[in-house]
Length: 96
Image 1 (cartoon, helix red, strand yellow):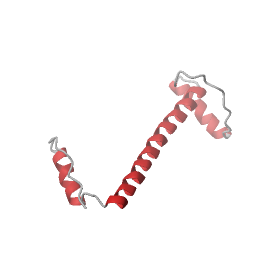
Image 2 (tube, rainbow, N blue to C red):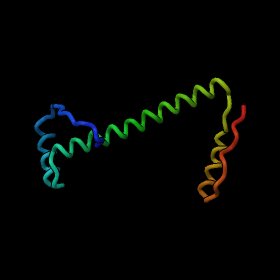
Image 3 (cartoon, rainbow, N blue to C red):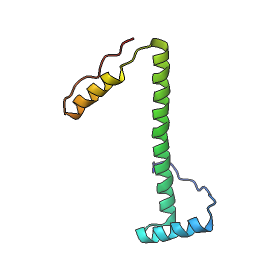
């Protein structure tokens, strides 16, 4: 968690989920509060990465639409195969 001031937030969960959370917290020797904070932090981190990937994809698509520059699937596959073999090579050059 960051060094900023933490503020309380209320969430509503059903009794079954609350009981499951309590059992897991007891098993992990953590509080339910700690588990909820950890779960929320992991979710937000994961979703921020997904959103960044989505934004990068949209930018790449717009760049392709504007310029037509690309590499073929065969070119990309050949490059990736060389990387898998441990060769440190530059990616293929984009072309129109």
